Amino acid sequence: MPKINLVLKKCLLLLFVPPLLTGCKKNSTKTIKLAVDPIEIDNLDLVIDFQQHGLLTPGQIEMLPDSNFAVLDNKTNKVLILNSEGDLISTFGREGRGPGESIGARQLQVSNNYIYVFDSRLLRINQFSFSGVFIKSHNIDTRQGVTIKDENTYFESIHGEKKSLFKKVDLEHDSANYMGDALAEFDQQMNLDKKETYYNKVRFQIIQKIRSRCTIVIPICMFFWMHLAGFRNIH
Image 1 (cartoon, rainbow, N blue to C red):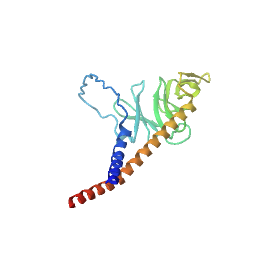
Image 2: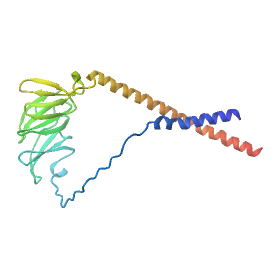
Image 3: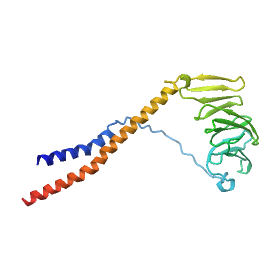
Image 4: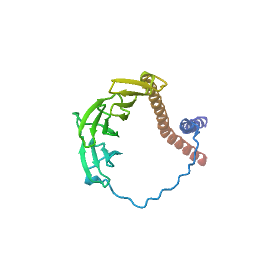
């Protein structure tokens, strides 16, 4: 009897430990209700058709100053120029590593005179005219995306490089200004991210081991419990 009670206590302990480990974090999230006025849409017109225009993964749409709009296809690394009626005017860009080509087109931006395609894999910006003529490329130092101000100025997100949050690049004067105060250097931030990932992984492994033991111990405890109950009924 003492041994059986001890086993049952261990089973109960293993049964309740995982919920305590995973559910002891207090939820302090506050719910804020916002009043949103409904918008009525009288009519919807199909402007871009996947089959007609050969789109696979449209990632971004930007309006052009001439009332046309550009569509970036993340899958084919192409840019489609269409008018307001949805008619295809031109297509430019393609997959590759050559001038005007991309292998990881992820962002599309428009200035008063040019279209810019950000390649997160080749780490560069391809510059095109509105008609699709390739102008030039700019190498960048980030995969986080850029913000284009004009044809000579853009901003990069740098996440702690030189203790800054982003930098302003001036192509005309070949200069860069670091702006914003980061909490740590880039290398320190990377180490913090690695440590957090490691701790989360270890915590997950501990919880998985506890749960796997529960799946083995609990049936054994139930067997002994049923056996004990049957033994008591006989005697």
